[in-house]
Length: 135
Image 1 (cartoon, rainbow, N blue to C red):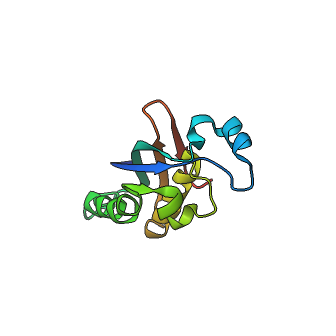
Image 2: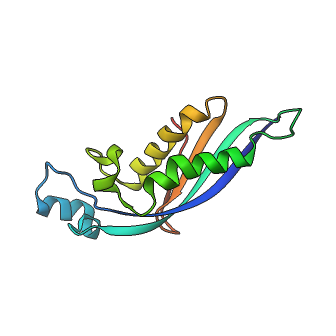
Image 3: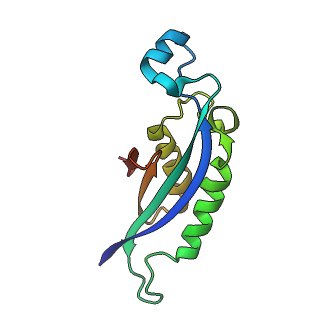
């Protein structure tokens, strides 16, 4: 029997959507206010889910303390209260769209969760969110 187990998390971060190889006008046309050269921020909500078999000894798919600590160390400490464009190495040459942030989160977690199917749902706003399963 396979079940999906999830952990919710939260972090705040600033970013600017833009491409270095485009001029300001093209960046404004494509990214609008999100291309503000002085950045803008979001209160991101994150749901990390793992799917796997129930361990017959523990009754767990995964010990939620392990998942909590992993999300805290790999994601919250890495992204919370950061300017993604400036302070997070993964975004040095990668536009920090919500899509790309979700992929970065997935890639930071997956090596620690190899025996599970992993799903990341990232809310940039209550109405705008993405889901990534490594596909």
